[in-house]
Image (cartoon, rainbow, N blue to C red; front, side):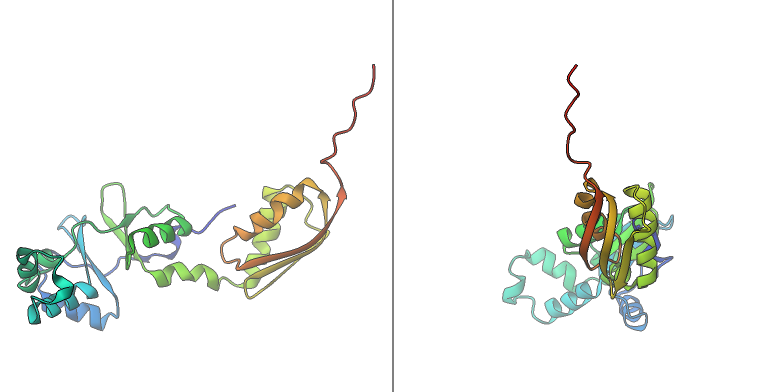
Length: 225
């Protein structure tokens, strides 16, 4: 079964800035493009860092109240550097969370959650920026048409992965919930069927009421010789 990959859902050729981009231009990009983060790249297109809207808001808050309780975890030097930053290079996070385009959307979601990242920067082997993935992008798999999900269950799960005849199995998908009724050829298929359907991208839940035609889990006694 093929799962959606990052390259299927990412925003390709995203808006990016250089380390020399002024703070005012960063704010303009974030507001006018309605995005939450800006990749910072070198002249060769490799990722150098990322600047988020939260970074700009923090800069303004520290500038206004550098001794605020919420900033006590930062050294005076760090607070001053943030408050006086004038370019993307001075404000950016230099260790952005990156992901390869061939990673699955599930892997990307786990990575984003583990690092509490607002976005993932998609890079190739050399670190060159290819795209950006936001939480909203990851939600796209739940917008797959029901008929598309149904066709994948029949083609890739029943016929392909499990190798069973799909004809006696009725598959209905409504709002991402898959319901399977009817009969499978072998009892051993039942154990793997629902987990396999549940792993299909876009499936919210699975319900099954299935019979089997042949119990292949019973070991037949060997003939006495």
